[in-house]
Length: 402
Image (cartoon, rainbow, N blue to C red; front, side):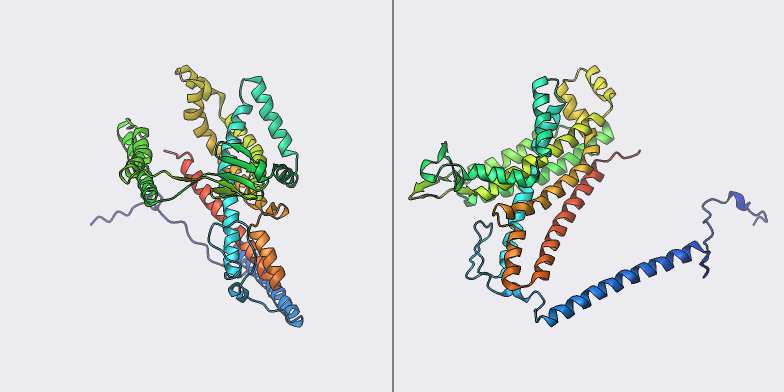
């Protein structure tokens, strides 16, 4: 073996020496640990005091605590539900679940519609057509300056001003009255369930095919077409399954009987007014986010795409919007959260969401702290779910350094 030793200056991958913790106030690590322990202890002490003081006050007033009331019969009438509910049989826990589902029904549908409407209006603000640009600008500036509660009351008043069911406005098989909007309802049969299952399978297969196309493009520079496969899997496959099983297509049409309509589906005035107000109000903010995101893309991208002979619509879809999404997604998350939390204003127009049902529950049971805790937990869970999904999507579309 050679007696020559390697020069330590040229040794690769040498780890930096670890600093030893010194029990001295001059050591920054020691100071950081002490401050963290003190702050955590102070927060814990405050929480302990609040819990102890609350328990003492509740005990002095002989107010029961806990969530045992959730197993008691509710007796709360709820106008519209997504799951079966009988106030004479079901519990407060079931009623709160109905409230959560009603909140989600507004939030999910509202987010989708507000995104579509806001994107169209945001693009319209950048249009070279003077009339379209000014109309969309007027929409944005007007709706953003009117409080949302006033807009909800306005739409609810408009819907309540519709004629009675006997004089309902008829649009084909759709009827507009002060009892709500009655629409034909598809009668679900086994063929529809199998067709939906085929759609889900086709969606999964489309995602896998898109990933395979991306890998092939990265390896060869040639990307196989995805849209023909997507159309075949998402539309063709469910249609084939539906046709093989007999292609049933029967609608339950609303019929006027007595003083109201029977059959079909119903959009109550409360739900439709809430949805309309939230969508139009939030879309005004989303439009500005979309407009600013598009304008954040350098003008050279438009010019380069135009030099290749691409049409303006193709440039917007294929070049500008994919880059603008990286600017649009983060503030869009805030608007989705705002729409979800603003749905709590439903109590002002009589729509029974989680806030309305929880308020009724705590008034009947006296469990105010538990009722407020349920509301906070529901909105916290929904907000965190939206944030996690949007953060995942933002990371998915982020630029990756090569």
